[in-house]
Length: 347
Image (cartoon, rainbow, N blue to C red; front, top):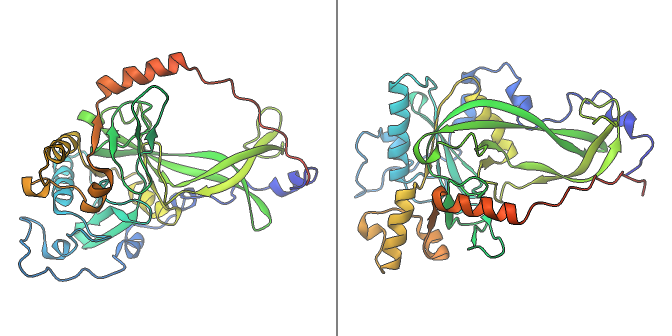
């Protein structure tokens, strides 16, 4: 990249390329968002012999199943019950609710659900799960990109916590500049804060929420005093735009940028519920069944069969035990003082 004339490219880029934030600033109504929600593949008729789930309308029942883009019965039942509980208490009034099945394969697997029963719309999109960590002298509680084995509500664990959440405010922050189409563009990423209860009660403290799976991997600094994101010395970070839709998060729910804007728009100023499966009790029960040589499904438990074969048995790491260990690790291994980014030079 060239060094001296770059400030010319940055001028007037306050409203540059924005992931999700552009959608949020639009004046489109909720009704205009509905076409996005319609499942791209019509739901199959309910297979003969498959028992109907009590209380679930037929159109939604047709989306229940273990295939990609379908929702498992237990996940739907819990998500509906949690949504109705909060709606009945007057905590929310959004006609849509969200759910996620973190036992299913990640990557391009569609396991995050947007359900609007009043309009009979259902949408399933990919989503990331928490990466966890593999630290020296500590048990390995990391996850692969495809299947999640480890879960926790411990701060700094970078793991997913199952349970119920209510969406809160949306915050948009600058993540750096990247090059696109011969121009230098700012990445502004919107973040939907989740508020939890019970095992998820520390969601705000952990900065757990939902956001597009995109980040700028910083490489160097560019002089651009006219940029609204410049530091006190007039520099802005520059790097490579990374789309990690098929990867993992730091514990948040991440969505492909192409879907994130629509999801965020549905929750903007309209709180709703998010139910993430599995909860701690599910993880413990499935783990015990597997270690006892029993079939979880035979014991009335649910876990995606493909991922269960891959991970062996899931683990839940309670914050009461993992969090103190992480605090001690941080005290024993303080992070090195970050070096300033180098200044970008001409090739």
